[in-house]
Amino acid sequence: MNLFEVMWPELIVIGTACVLFLLGVLPMPGARRASAALALISLLGTFVLLVYYLMFRWPGDTLHDSSNALRIWYFAHYIKILATGIGVMFVLMSWPTNKDATGNSALDFTQDGGEFFGLMLLSIAGVMLVASANDMILLFLGIELAAIPTYVMVSISRPLPVAQEAGVKYFFLGAMAAAVMLFGFSYLYGTTGTTNLTEIARQFSDRRTAVGSINALPLSTWQMLAVIMLICGFAFKLAAVPLHFYAGDVYQGAATPVTALLSFVPKASGLVALIKILYVIGGGMWIIPAPIGKLLWILAVLTMSVGNVLGLLQNNVKRTLAYSSIAHSGYLLTGIAVIASPQTGFVQQDALQAVLFYLAAYGIMNAGAFGVLMMLPSRHPKAATSAETFDDIAGQGRNHVVLGLAMAVCCFSLIGLPLTVGFFGKLFLIRVQLRGEDYWLVIITVINAAISAAYYLRIVASMFLRATSEAYPHAPAPVGVERTAPAPASFPLVLAVGLSVFGTLILGIIPPLTETVFTTAQTASSLEPTSIPNATQASALAR
Image (cartoon, rainbow, N blue to C red):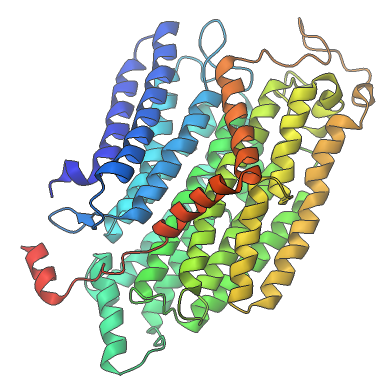
């Protein structure tokens, strides 16, 4: 197939981003508003086309380009639909609503509206490219395409020193993680002689077949080093322990809509890349060496435990949600640990299905919490323009009941309480842990979910139980803004929060809809059962 037929969704989004960069040259407010509209149309249109194509035009076979560097199957389509769908909410949250169209209640990109939305589209396109990549070089480029725009977005998201500091810190640590990851890819290439993931998977499969073993064979020293370095690089994208230290400062420093994007886009790219590499070293059959499985198990336990414990100690809501994001990476890694376990049969596929469902659930429910913060004012207008601390949100749930209820729904879902999509997300993960007979992982996951309830309920309690006057009783209100007045709620922001809350509730209350998403994730979890062509097919592809 030609290149356009394989990667038309990425080309649409990247092409729109290029147009937005050109549009950013124009200094008029109308150009910045047009940039937001064009970004929204691009993502929404791509989302609708992907859904239509999957339902009515998808041939059911794996699609690939002439060099086999890109391969499209249900898994890739699921990730692309998820990335564009969640991306729509990020655009709505970033919509310029002030007089000069330089931002909104929580965001101030000054004259760089076209560039800001162009960078956002490039980051989302990076996730889509990671989902399609069947070559180590393209996989690395996709990961970095998802990451590099976010470094700039953090710095230009508001003209405050804390934002520039966060951007610089994020950039240098991201460069270090990219170097580690690139070393891992180079060692994997050096030990296999190819960058094609399908060919690498075939080599691992043939090696196991040659010795007549149905179990995973030990990796060579260089291959083990390569995989460990790759896991470290992906851990940075996931904000997983021990490469999680940047999350608190970067999430706090960035403008709230950018923080929401950071909590999902890099995480999705790192998770998808990790799944692909594990599938490859397992020879296309999830037969993964035991040391790698143990490493991922430890990584999952440490990540969710450290994230939840440190989340209890925060006084800034955005930092709390940053450590919450770390903890949710740990929950996702529990599913990956089950995939890497020595179990056989359908346990691995069920685990991947649970991971894909949880990724969608997290993207939906997490955006609403950040959106509510954007609608509430900061009590320190010189430090922030919208709510960020617990004192900022104190009593606001009583003064603005709808906002308080929206935050409560999102927090309850992040905990995993019934009647929310977060409940089913954790339920499916725990179920595959039980099927994998990893009872210690079940116990640790449940304990961590209970710990997380403390800081999520603290957010809800601050909004409903604390008195407004309790916080900064002598601090003056921002000029022209009443002490408890919310920031002007624009329709795009209200729509984004409404979509998040509606999706969180509807997928938790109506089982058929939940089953539909779960079934879609099940289809996507079938990672190309015929993805490893024989030698004749491989030579034909090479020609």
